[in-house]
Image (cartoon, rainbow, N blue to C red; front, side, top):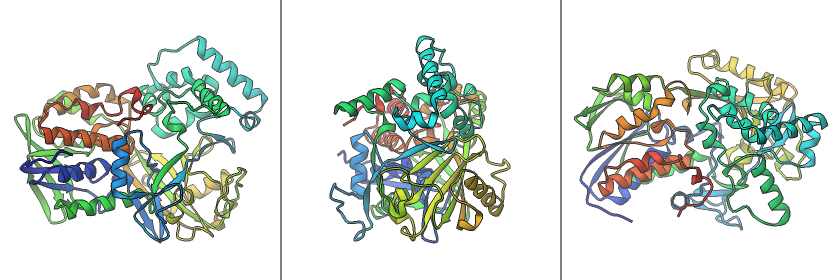
Length: 508
């Protein structure tokens, strides 16, 4: 552990995983640095926050605590103690604990469940039907012998799964997620999300399990267990925030960063709006996890071409409706035992073209402590991918609730609106940085921002990259390393989650 006498002030923009990790690490690794964290909302965690509604907690998007990076796992262990194989520490006796959870996510297509990733077993073929099974097989063989140029996301998926399986399980979901056809989206998004995954990879894993052998390079999506804070992901970041404050750091909630003043090749101050008015905070270092689009918009003397690219960077926003029901109509047809025998899924990918719903979270299965009455109620999260300002975003809560409940009935989860005990709506802006429009010119923006020697862009929105939570934390590790060592090269900060092997091999 490096511990340096570095003087000065670091302003951290955003109190999500990247911002809080950076603040915590700087306080641990330096002795005389002033740390100020600016957070626009009144809670910590960013899109990894947990919303508490009448004792029922909502995880915004579902956050598995799993990483191949040993640094990240060790960091989490230092904040919340992980359960061992015997279930200790006992979560009934202590709150600051990471539960061991079984990972189950499935695809709902044509009212039938399919494993995610697709597994080749009798149930899969039965659900598909003989005709579709043959079409999937021939389609895949065609993709083996005739590869398409991977100039877009559609071709990327077809090359790995064949056109038929792509049309069944990828096409509509992807279009629903991004609001664009997969043929209009850069293939690099698929490369990040399904590194190494294909029919052959799935078959290799399946036959490996049958023979008792383990595939040493297991795809992230195939991991069967993960850790999870007792009260959801926000709990970990709230505890982190308490530790930052205890070490002398300052966290300013309800404080929105609106500008970054640059002189020469250095950032000199951050302008922010507080409840008491505008404030200008001088800074020796700035770590930003705010959206690149907003960061550039608030900077002075930005070249017109850079400003144009940044202003055109697209995002997808997110809405979710928490739905509390006494029971589900849909049955648990697995051999997995659950409270009340509810379906065992953590989350479900909805591939039904007759609804707009994207995913369903079953919060009971993330953590039983997320639900006020876990034994007698089921707490669902119905997720929708939207654009800020569109017809969904502008819906009043009652209208949105009615729309979602009708879709839940259509999918066969409940019989009628009378089955619903309560609902709660949440919105998240800029949840997903998107890979189209001016994104193909992003390298120019990266080059410009890297030229500001004391500015470090971290996290999902800070880098406009679809980072998982652990990736965001690693960008913070690398930024702190640059500050502590005085290394001006930010290549390592920007390279997180760009290498193919990142997901496939453990890093120590």
